[in-house]
Image 1 (cartoon, rainbow, N blue to C red):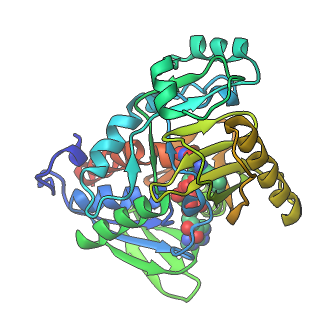
Image 2: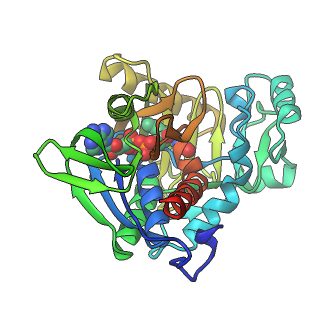
Length: 359
Ligand SMILES: Cc1cc2nc3c(=O)[nH]c(=O)nc-3n(C[C@H](O)[C@H](O)[C@H](O)COP(=O)(O)OP(=O)(O)OC[C@H]3O[C@@H](n4cnc5c(N)ncnc54)[C@H](O)[C@@H]3O)c2cc1C
């Protein structure tokens, strides 16, 4: 059942039941939207819904193929569906967040490595045709002789995407509560009690733990063991009037994209614990590499630098499954989460439908 593609929501074959979603990052927002669209009674609780730790800091690349600069893409079956699912979900949002299906260019240190990555890729990566290169990266100097090109990938404003899904969930009847969840407790008849720091408590039939780095603690209260690593990355913006780039450009030295307003967004990995000045120096070094690659008159200055802590399930790309002894408590975590949000939202909605049928 694929409700996000069916405008006739809600699906009246599902028994309505109550679901608490802990976490209003991109995954919690997508889950809340899909559940509300199926007609469930949804409560979303987040301690910092205005500034989720990772989601609003994201670069915003919805990528099936990944980057030739990052080594062989991980084999995640869900990635095959992410572009179609994201398109379908965006089509249900009003207002639509800023999105551009303008493709992604990437390259490795050497042309040989880039060609090898293209050969390894099973997901739509090809050698960039010269006509596309002159349209997409007209100012690029000759050093990148082989460029990997994924024509159908998207860039979007992750913060707008997240808040549009939350708004739509609320319009469909969901409740959004600010608050830190301290405890989750099982109740008789397969239901749960969710206790907030404020002392407020909510009871529900099902529970979605989409709270990123907060998942292990709450899962442990239900006897589950879920390891979530946390890795920092920086997002910043810059202006460069003489830079002509219409798609994602991902290389070992920099990752940039246009933002639709004439400015650019960039992302950089960060070493945990490094001083902020070091991160700023990394950002400057990457923009110096952009200047060289595109022959810009001057090195742009990084602006609005934000560090986000990416929740990364230990040893796997995603977790979207109920805790072993709690079929009503689903853990939802993924990296890359912006890319996987729409596809995992469908999985959450299907899980809730199964729950509603058996309970
Ligand atoms: C710089 C950067 C660039 C990135 N670029 C991309 C990209 O281009 N494409 C891509 O797909 N991904 C990208 N990512 C990764 C992506 O942002 C994450 O995978 C995704 O945002 C994770 O979403 P989430 O909802 O799981 O977690 P989060 O956004 O961290 O949300 C979790 C929420 O849970 C809340 N919470 C935690 N504990 C509790 C509690 N006890 N009670 C209540 N609330 C709680 C937190 O307040 C938070 O709001 C990037 C990340 C960064 C930082």
